[in-house]
Image (cartoon, rainbow, N blue to C red):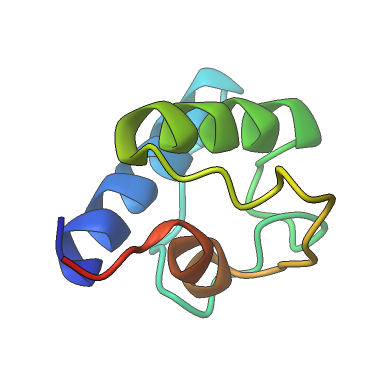
Length: 83
């Protein structure tokens, strides 16, 4: 999966999670801050996205402990593996 494909997948997951929370998602870019920015994503939604990404990519960036990330782009970087 290319980085662009992974970004599009993450964007779709974020948008769906926001909709599931009863909100209309804003435009999601790589610079979008995931939590605390008022986009309507909560920590449970983010945790669900992380689990889905682990299943889809086979990458477990948190197996050695928590890795700090705040934006969509940083999340994509954590799960992107070069083909």
